[in-house]
Each structure stands twice: as C-alpha cells, then as structure tokens.
Amino acid sequence: MKQAAREAKKRLKSGYWSRVRDEHSSITAGNAADVEKYIGNKVLRELKESSQHEQDRLFYKKVEEIIDNECSIINPLRLLTDDTVMETLDYPGRQRYILKISEKYLQTRRQILDERALKNNLNKQPTEV
Image (cartoon, rainbow, N blue to C red; front, top):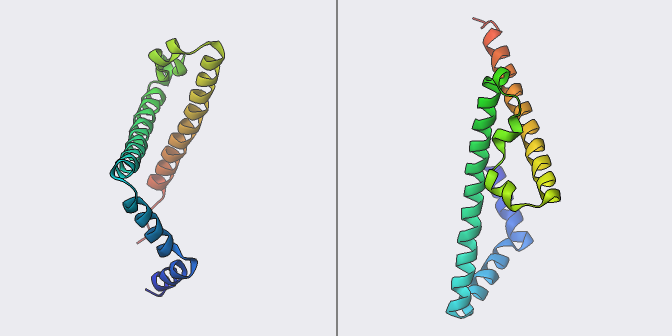
C-alpha cells in the first residue's frame, strides 16, 4: 500500500497527470478529423502489436515442432520463412530476411531448450516432506 502511495505521489510531482490532461485537451480541442485520425492511428498501432504477439506465438510453436522432429528436418529456416515475402525481396533483402529469421530461430530455440531443461531438472528433484 505504501509503495502504491509513493508511486502516486511521484506521478503527481513529475507532472504526469498534467501531461495527460494537456494531451487529452489538445486532442479534444482539435477538430473532429484530427481526433478521428489520432484514434485511428492508436487503434492501428494496438492491432499491429497484438498481431505481432500472435506471429511470435506461431513462430514459437513452429520452432517447438522443429525441435521435436529435429532428426527428420534438414533445413529449419526453410520452414520458417514466408515464401510470399521471399518472392517480393531482392537479393540483399532476402539475405537480411534470412539473417533476421535465423537470429530469431536461434534465440527461440535456446529459450525452448532452456525451458525444457529447467522443467526436467524440477521434475528430477526429490520433494522434501
């Protein structure tokens, strides 16, 4: 409770609420077209963020499948790249795209393997009574 009160006091001192009020008044003081544009941009930004989260979740699942079937998969990056994106890119763009996918794959793979190792270690530890 004290921590929440400290944070609220800090926001008051830093002028957080006055900035929020100024932003709100500038939006409402503008014409209707500006307000619609602002709200539209905000909604689009939020949709892109949720779409990115969904894409990351699907990528994670694909990498899990690749790890589970590792012995039968020769080129995991081929499974993770989007053919329609690859067709639209020039050669340097393809290289950048493949490098980006490769970095993301290695990071996600390491995360999955670490999570599995941690889970296995937790399951092996005896419970104390």
